[in-house]
Image (cartoon, rainbow, N blue to C red; front, side, top):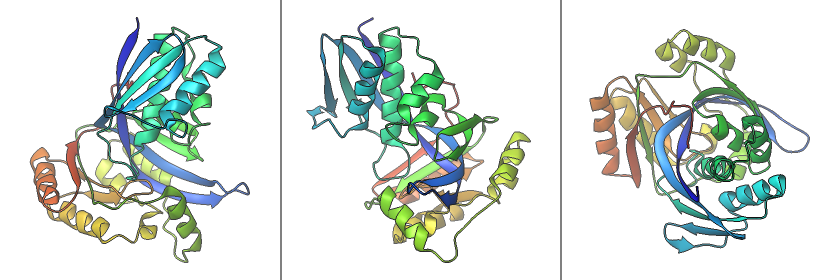
Length: 286
């Protein structure tokens, strides 16, 4: 086997509660992560040596890229004398809070593990992934999960099914670092009981869970597009609409595919990105 093609799914944060700030500057959180059927497309191909990276047909300055970092860590860990050409087709919008870069890195780690038959466990891949970014370990596991710590503590929970997800994003993005800095200045920070949300999801009561879901970072965004998108989702029957992660994408949960499609149609008239998705729960992004 000399080449593997992978799908790298994005994620939404069904709820995101920032719980504290550590002395090293990292924030701890409690969140419900869900992989979603919107994918970047990743190809990893064996080379004799070196790491080559192309994104959407253009060779890019790679050293700060998450895919490059993932490959470098893999070869350092395994001591393999080999190389890889990584090709990325981006479909997940950037600076959106959807975890595209983290998912791409996880896909590269999983792909190289299979390509070179190194049989690293998920735990080992997660330990590599967290060196790249706090969200990377989640994408090694995928599906629906209760996530805590700085994002590295992952507990799979009952998968969410039978809903439709609309996602939309305006032209403006949000810096993750800037969002967390802004959060530290807020006087009225949003919080919730994430463990109760997990319990309701376990009992298949997603609508009751939705009533408790918050995003602690939403008030940090200060973008009109976020409220406009939420309003469109609500008018089309969403039972939950929230900003995902540090933003600026917004998702809406629907019981009806037709309502989700109508919301995306309305958003597509005004905003740079809009798509209908479903929960991605097949257990692997490879």
